[in-house]
Amino acid sequence: MELGSIEREIFVQASPEVVFEVVSKPEHVRQWWPDGARYDPAPGGTGEIVFGDPDADGGVEQLTVVESLPPRTFSFRWTHPAGEAAREGNSLLVTFELVPSGDGTLLRMTETGFREMGWEVAVLEQRYGEHVEGWAYFLPRLAPYAESLQVRS
Image 1 (cartoon, rainbow, N blue to C red):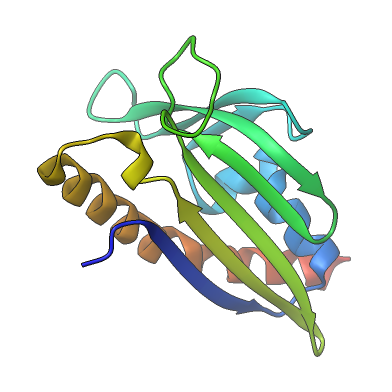
Image 2 (image 1 turned 180 degrees about the vertical axis):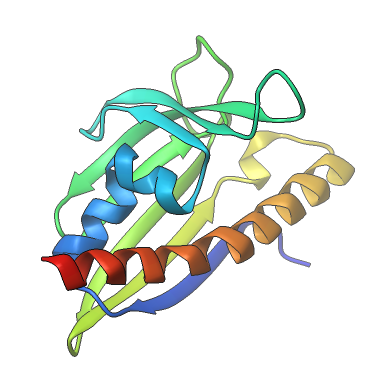
């Protein structure tokens, strides 16, 4: 099994401008992905995303925006240790590419950097599997949310 990257592609019945807002702005991201999102969406912006209750079984992940090119590309590094700058080897890179397609948007999501983390094989397999399951659950929630915004605009 190749554990280097996760790639997903979905069609969203909304304009690239709307989809870009949905993948980049914290107030929209938390509607389909984490329970909480606090970060500056500009390149170099930092913050965190929160899953569940951090005082229970939930967690907080650090996030640093790498690239923001509306309405085409948004990428960030995440999972790096608090207090450390995100870089290859201590974080995973998520990239959303948006391509106009008919009257909607083809969204390509890629998450890379698993092998570069230096985890032993068992940890690599576990973390990779968790992220595959996570994206399989969360990414399908993005399209209906973006489409509901498209209707209002």
